Image (cartoon, rainbow, N blue to C red; front, side):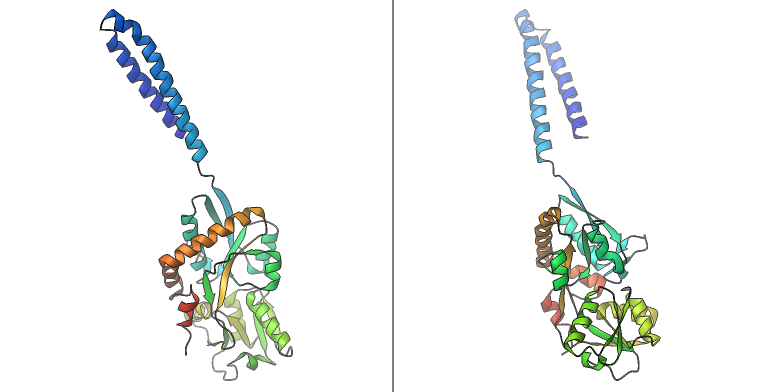
Amino acid sequence: MKRNHLNKLLAALFAVTLAVGTLAGCGEAKEEAKAPEQKEETVAETAEAASEAEETTEETATEVKTYRVATEGAYAPFNYIGEDGQPDGFDIAVAKAVDELLPDVEFTYEAVEWSSIFVGLEAERYDLIVSQIMRNPDREAKYLFSEVPYSYDLGSIAFKKGRDDIKTMEDLKGKSVVVGVGSSYANDIETWNADNGNEVIINYGDGDVTKALLEVQEGRSDATLMSPVTGSKIITEQGLDIDFVLRGDQEAIPTYWLFAKNDKNEELIPKVDEALKQLIESGELGKISEEYLGGDYTTLEAVKERIPK
């Protein structure tokens, strides 16, 4: 398209040059003798200038690299499938805002079941995951993380409405808790359980929060661990008979972008971190959170203000 534009410009300049040469022919014989030489020099100079301009354009053209972003697509309002059948939610909105700030980067998006999302990353079916990922030693050994967190998760314990025997993690001893296999909550309860006598019965699900809440409502598990943002939305929308309490044994946990270990991502991560910093400093990240999550969960300070005193 840029080459066609240059060709059209050359043709137009050539036509003007010919016209000038024709007018010159109506003058004195001395002037007429010089016209062909002048015409050739003008065309040559124009062609040389156009060639240099084209080379400069090609040299300065930005090479755009495409990165495949995976998200769960079943953890509303953080990520879900929109009415158009495409991934949507807070996670995707943040990724799109980052994409806008990076002219040499283009993201594509794919919804992947949680139970297979890390397997797909290791098989290089996609390049990175943006899906409320928290750090833990196992993940840090296998993958790369962004340095800048883009949200903070408030942990909570959900149980069937009417129960008064579950208020803290200690109350889960001797009870069953359903969590998504391989999830941060699974790692959390496994670690807590190991440090506290292994008295909690852990049931593993596929990571779908709605299914976990239904399992609790139907009595197949006593409780589940979840984000109160997600839980509140699902409980309200589906009219579930569920209550939850915020956990008092931990602070809000930061969430990060997670990447496959390769040179391509080593190059991308600093760009993502810089873009996230810009979005935080401009207040744009907070606005995205307000739109999708109903409040600002993008900085630790903002989240602390939301924790009941």
